[in-house]
Image (cartoon, rainbow, N blue to C red; front, side):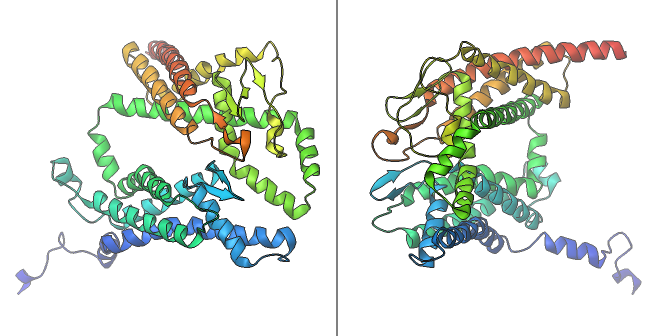
Length: 417
């Protein structure tokens, strides 16, 4: 009779059983709901801000709450590349601040989804032995379907013949967002990413980490440069606000719009520091070597632009900043993954820097677009030239930083020995 009872090694406590069940929840159901939640969460926030903005502008004297809801939904769709028509004028610029919030929400929701379905499929030992695991793929597809379905529904309800958002671009952006943020988060949350990453060559992991370090360091430098330029001419920004004649609520909404567009301005600053610069209208250019601008809209963020005309003698030297920043980013990454071989330091630094330059070029391509009629249909960085300059500058700076850090680590290793 006692032979039928499980021994002590095979017995499982109620807590262990509950923990196992929490990680074996229905995959398809959870993935679909997670996709809807990832899209719907940020959409609801935009809708709430739209209604609040409608009420604050004129205390609800004109229009109806649905107008605020439509504005919030269109802002969310624009963050997914839809574009929109305002009084017959096509506006295609993407508010990257909202896009970043959507990407963060997608990552967080997908990471929790990965943890919830981590018990599905083979375990780590069987995956390491080469057994196929479809858990991340199936969860990612269903998650993407939920996100895309929500986006299409929002676009269908919010679009009118006068606004005309491009739903095809919304679907494309939603799929790319889920592939770049959702699927990796599911893999990380389910533990598959660590298992798969263990099989990658160390050089690939080190190069990817270097790329991330260079890109994040450069982003912070570009943001600081933009904020510094805005602070130096803050009086002009206040003057532009006074020209708009907004009250306290209107000024708060103006600040919110500026925050939403701050990532765009950061990418514009990066293109400026790299040398090619950007345009703020047809036949205009803003670069360290030349500044030619005409009449501009009354918008406070434009106070950060330099004055039109000859540039100071020190501005062309700003193009020396990107290689220095890349070298610092490589040094930060190599402190976490030290190497004593010069060829490895050069490979990780140069390869990671060039990858960061290519990634920055892709991001820059998302920053511009049409913001108004006439000459304002061409606003944005010079994408091709910026990418070439970024790959070159970050590659050279990364090579120097990788070799210098390797020399320092070899010297410290000899001293410690």
